[in-house]
Length: 458
Image 1 (cartoon, one colour):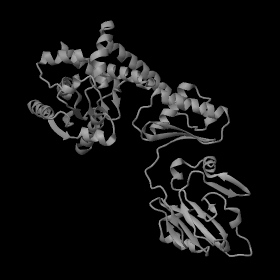
Image 2 (cartoon, rainbow, N blue to C red; image 1 turned 135 degrees about the vertical axis):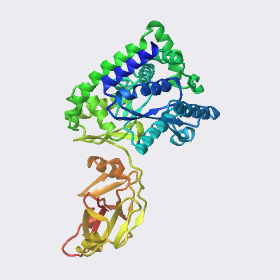
Image 3 (cartoon, rainbow, N blue to C red; image 1 turned 45 degrees about the vertical axis):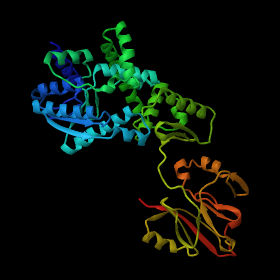
Image 4 (tube, one colour; image 1 turned 90 degrees about the vertical axis):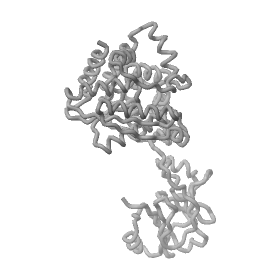
């Protein structure tokens, strides 16, 4: 009866969330543990009914030495016994965690999913099935609550995310163990699962048992909670997705629940896989409301996870992920084309206004902006350099701090790293996109020299 219950719950998940389509090829994440054993065995039983083709993928994380090799061998032999295609991929989770400076558990998870997607591309897989259960869902929700996640974290593990499906999402650990015992299926046990130094293991072994003393059906209760929250979130996300304005004063008029989802959506559009915590969302909302209420016109920034900045300007908000690029060094400029490191930009200097046309035709650059100044004023060595702390610029009979000028002009932080300051022995005389220093303005009594700031064309 236990296995029948498992099959019933799997079918419920398949039908409720449209997990499978007729003719799907399914890659099953197969660790050899009790959950993945039941998942693979069950999908094998249902393969004719749903007309699906199965392939099992075992990922060796190379964390547990001989024990990991034992698991790999076990998985291969199990697949041979039940006539399921088998693939094994090896990854180095320890080295990856050191390189990325993340926890070993997180490193293993990232590499595992990368292996899933890689194998799916290689053999033309349409769906990837992982063995997440309602017990895993319970642990995930608790984990998210403890770390301070928003309501997004309360919906737990998604039964379906793109091509990834979780057919066991309505099956508890008790269901799985009973089914394995009934079918007399052996499985392997990961020794690290008992190590409570890992947060999730601590929750599993110490917190969940206390909850189940109060409610033995805690998994079902948390699954019901997750389903309800998911329904509400889907509706509110639909409303938020229709919001297209990025104007601060318009955004603060939105209901907080919608505003938060707009901010989350825009953050995710940067490509970040990190889930924002409620503290990050609250900080963004607080800064946005303060900015709009005070009619501020300076650029404000807030650092977020994954090295992403939340940016507010007078007329828009956006998220920026600073790109890895060369910070502009110091260059002595000469007549002709002066390439500026690997910044994708150059300065072209000429006394002939028409000469720029041939330069554009012969090179990959296009004109970004230009200026002209009187030739007799160029008596010093001219350099292009990176902006420095304390830089000021004198123009139109006033002196302004360069940092404030760039803020007011809404120049992105990432662009400021490569925007050149053109200097003579008196300091900055031109910043591309801004006016020329007063003493260098051309007049009718002198020859003119042309300065062009060029950027790579698309």
